[in-house]
Image (cartoon, rainbow, N blue to C red; front, side, top):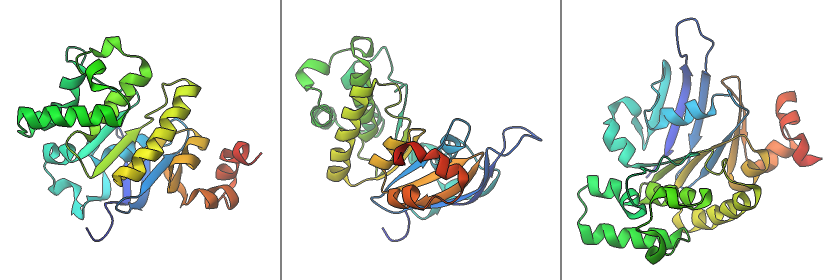
Length: 247
């Protein structure tokens, strides 16, 4: 495709009359195949910005485009099936097996049973879970890291061009978090999808992002490659945020 995969233009959002803006004229582009990390502390607006992309949040002002189409022209269901979504608590359906969780969207899309089964095996192997061991397990039988891997497999199941990840590794311990980050980098090289990640963790943002957007109080303060964020912070807030990395 030509042009950005995702674009926000002067997007603002308030939750309730008179409330302060959760998003305040936020603008950014995500190019096809790029990984953009939205970085900021709790309440910065980064998750709200992410959710405007798949219409989980409707902006009050401004425009959001996905694949060159304004977001309101997309059917919500069609858009969400073309967008993989990974969240911190994974959100696996507890009464379904791992295989049934992974094949959920392909089943809704009308894929044959044989095609779904092959896709489940392929993706479980891809995220490092042996299909013969894990396909029939229930989410309660998995560790936190294993559930997170299943969440990634489910998000990729229908081969969406766009992947949204909201604090995807935040619930993991330090060792598993580093492991998942390393595996994500390998996956990114293989899949070459457009990815938007939300995190509050500066080292994670530096490690995973092609570019980083630093957010605070609903505003986008700086947008650039990791080296620029580290070496030429735009203001005192960004400088303080990255201080520990440079220390």
